Image (cartoon, rainbow, N blue to C red; front, side, top):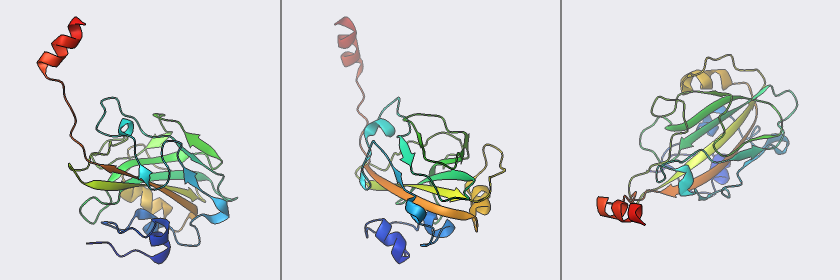
Length: 200
């Protein structure tokens, strides 16, 4: 069943239904979304485009995709990134990345770069949680960036509830970009293939 989305969030998602309401709708309003031209993008995918397998569980040495953003409005003290699976089952957000401590200016995270501070993802660790939807299912991943008027005073490893508590009522601007990925079989070489390759 599709989640009930505010009109402005639905428009930001291209009118596509989602399994749940993104945290963007919980932490920001239409007034903050894109305020002052604040925007988020990636050199690795277009908004709504397909995520390359090199950023997913399909590849052994996968890393987080690159992201870049424009300058937030004056008065912003910090940027916070929340990445979630919009089509995961359940009512609570399934986080793939929770990042804060980003400088309140035009900037970027390079492919595979370690961010300043990270919190717990959906598996309870602080890494980029590799997208791994069920075989044949396409899931969408929302990269949501929030500018806040107060710096976060959280210990590394904080969870989403702690971060969200610090964001509510303090967001100066928000931006979002989405990517989709379909669950694939991960091909494995059998012993014969491995031996043949080793002899070449």
